[in-house]
Length: 138
Image (cartoon, rainbow, N blue to C red):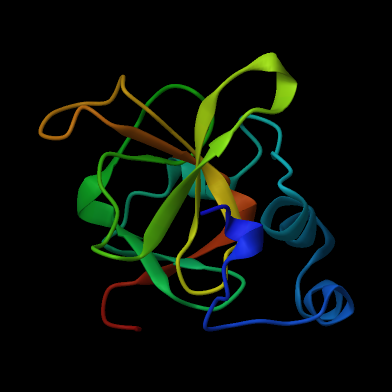
């Protein structure tokens, strides 16, 4: 089921989302945008903690699954169980697997089959869609 067709636990009007998110986060999370590679400080963040959805606060990934993919975007090999869902993205004449937050439906990025063991997956996420919460501050 496409993210836009599902009823999520956290819902807001477009204007409520626009008012509650920074402009770049709104563009990524609500309009399926992509931040420029290398612009997110979360790409080089390697402290222990979680990466939470900026739209609703749900924990999405742990620092234990983060790796340096060299792509310029924060990358993980496995999400927290039930934190994300996927849909087929056919934009830009490609077929990709889009990843979105399971709680608010916010667009996070895409997943690819070129990641490290143990999953072989690369969850290539937009840092603008997430916030880092250091271990012990959750």
